[in-house]
Image (tube, rainbow, N blue to C red; front, side):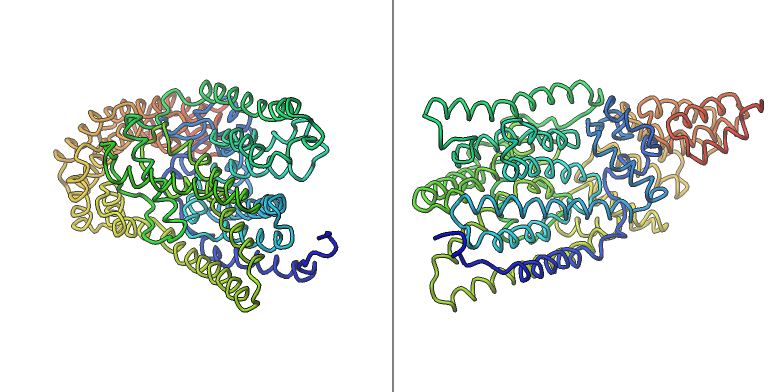
Length: 583
């Protein structure tokens, strides 16, 4: 069938569909723009002195310690930090709306790139006549899928979006600008994505698999003999691997020296992730029971039935994709979608242990592979079905799926509205999560409901008895209820559990200052700043302590040092004006 004779949706109609698609994505997230900061947003954005000035942007690329005021989380993600600094500048400060607006715009941008990517994939798989509409369906599903609410609402996960933009952007560049395929410039978006999160280097194996499944996409492959075709394939495939390896070395050298990912044994982590793969597929199909902080424990035995279930499903899924690819041209797109899903999961869900067993943001990029599977199978079914009634049912099912996800996303955004709504939802979905009970208790603390706060903290203590952050909060609770000896005991135990980070030192120092023990507070706060130089809150408090001790020289020195990092910081500027000698 010639291109002219293929049935296609008219350009005007498709434009209307595209506008409706964007409107659907906006409607799904219309209630999230004023949601508060959560989790690591406190140390990565709110209390990170380096984000307060655009002149620190070059420093982001030289020093991973600038990413977070909490050293164990100081990964090398300079492009993510740059985007946050720009949001701080555009919003005139720490305004959640500015950060959320950028987050949503980048998410929508990924939807546009996903459309271009999916359309090409479906076309080369022989689905030209339905590729545009099926790709639009897939792109909208990527944008409104309920599981992706975590990535859009949790602002620190900007790194996931930027990395995904880089990976998909390189594919689109390669596919849509064929005259530049031999120049390797199509690698640049993926490389830029790696500067947002190193996991973007997964582009290399994905691209190799792409050229293996679709050899016609290799440069001039139709004009080359077997040996020449293999050399052309290697010429395209090897550079992304080399660039990815070089970047891995670079980020390892520039990441914060106290960066910690996880300590679970590799074998235990892998067998847990095998079951997590099945969990993520289940969430793609039925995204219910979502939890922003799941209470999964490691699977300690390789012969656990969950490991067998995950293994058998993965083998069956891949085998079905191979059979489908051999029987129908559309099956090649389905097969590549399956490969994409498992390969894109590998940086976080394989042999590289992280501190948490599962997270809902991990399948953000992998889900593009499952969307490709669904779009290819749906388009192929539409093409094979002859009765118009059955075709209408298929289209109606696709529309209902989009609307269900859009409504589910709108509803899920309400859980992310503030800290209380978020942690309440987590305790309901993951009642065995001690951190969730502690954080839920903090909301009661904030309004002086100490009885309920104590209930939540004590519930947390039964689940995580040696958690330093919980000890800090117990110390704050005892201090607020006038039990000074118990408060100090908890603060000291927190430091004994974890003296390497700033958190326990800061809160103990703050408690000492509140109890007029400023001389002792100085040592704690100095230790906090030494552990976390970007901690703006600790700097402000130590300046005030110096001033209360009439140590103006020390207050002046610290204020000037802080202004060197954050020149527009009003509290440091005011302190310098009061404490520094006039010239």
